[in-house]
Figure 1 (cartoon, rainbow, N blue to C red):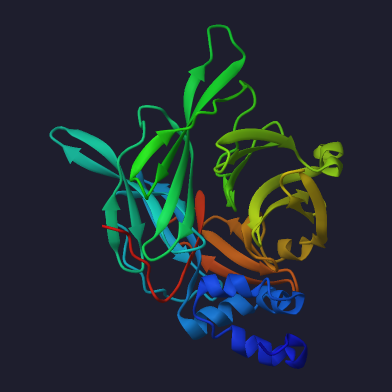
Figure 2 (cartoon, rainbow, N blue to C red):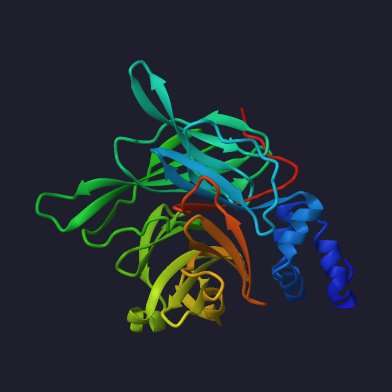
Amino acid sequence: MVSDQLLPYDALFEILTQLNSLKALDICKAVSKEWKEVIQESSFESTHCRRTGTISGYFVQDLRSHKHVTMFVTPDNVDVRMKSLPKDTKILASSSKQGILCCEREIEKGSKRLSRYFAYIPITGQLRDLPNPKTRHDTVSVTLMVAGAQPLCFKIIRLSKRGFIRRYSELYKYGCEIFDSETWTWKESSDELSLPFRELIARNSSVSVADYVHWLTTEDNILSYSITNNSFSKFPLPKPVQENLHSYKSKQLFDYDGKLGLVCLTERRDMDLWVMNDIKNQIWKKERLANIETLESIVQYPFLLGFYNSHVVFVEGGFNEVGFYRLQDSSFSSVKLGRLDRASEIFRFRSDVEPNYLSI
């Protein structure tokens, strides 16, 4: 392989933006620091999508007249060729790796309306029903993890409420069910989860990184589940964040280049970014400090939704609007939500131009 030291930045950019495999592109980040910096440049992903047909953006979901309405948005606000979701569909989880959704839809059975879980590939419109988990228990969180492609191998992790451990107890029990596409069955986790009644799992906070699923709790802890070890653990936020909780207006978890990331926003619009480089020893490292005050001159009430990539932030801009804010030049591209009032739920989604298929 020719050393990247011999290739100027522009040449690397041209070569890498024409690589049409997301998996290969993710592997390229590990080749060298220079390659990683090129791929993480703010304009790279949009250019790559335009040249290869790769799809990268967010499904935005809202509830209108008791029906879930979805829309797909991208930084360039371009039309993306995808099959429409089936009628009466609610997205539960998505994959940012291999273009698959976990969804739920209502079906009629006699005089009853029942829900049914299914896996869906928007690029091809392929749908396959899944066996239902224990839907009599209220869902807290659903997370989708993709392990391989052609055909797709994936797991679905579902947390549900189970009630107090015993009468007059302060501990509330949660159930964890795991669906494995290789066996096409749900299995209950053997490790029981219980939390103090006042400590809730934050809404829409689940993040899948490597073999872990992470959730943020209302008591400012991070709850993690290891697929490999079939076990739960809980650890605190970075110490400087713990010591200054009163100064932060919001905190969110996200996947930061394959690692667990935490972004904290202060009242002064300072954005602190922390990354957990060592999940086993729970070691945090502060990656950057940015100020998004400029965004408030463009959008009246910005609310941080997530990171599109390491240099572009996805935000809600108020009623009927979301957008992409580039930290490098403080520019903002707005997207109107059409039939949606707001971004009640968002789902990061990426897919190759060559579609994957569910096994039959």
